[in-house]
Length: 201
Image (tube, rainbow, N blue to C red; front, top):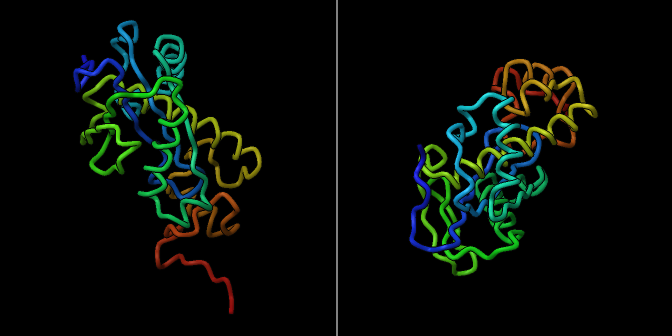
């Protein structure tokens, strides 16, 4: 079982992001404030869960948390401020949207910017250690995947229904063939050097 809390504060929020390593689509973050009902043996780091389990747990988390919020930062902003700052911005936006103001924040990873002078703690692999970060990771992943499925309808050639924007061989071959679209992160290395696009003079 994952640890329930890090601090002794009543309202401790866990926050995490999804999509940081993708070539396309938003980076999505979620924040969750737990209560005693929000414990389930299946809850874990979202990367360790199957699609069916993530979708089941998303509903469970939404129904049993004290509160939760999800936020997205789009590719244009990612290109402007870089992916690390965009990931932190998405986490800040999700924390801002919480109807209950957290007294303490635990963050997956090792980088964060202070939020409203609320004390925080970064935790490497926190999504596999603490319940609130794990639940935030599940929400971030499922909400982002939902968006990528919608974007797939608009640009089916990139197969975002399968790769969700990650740099798979199939995704990169589609970029090489069709070029990037408006949802690609142009500040990212979309193709390996030997496959660089020729945009002409």
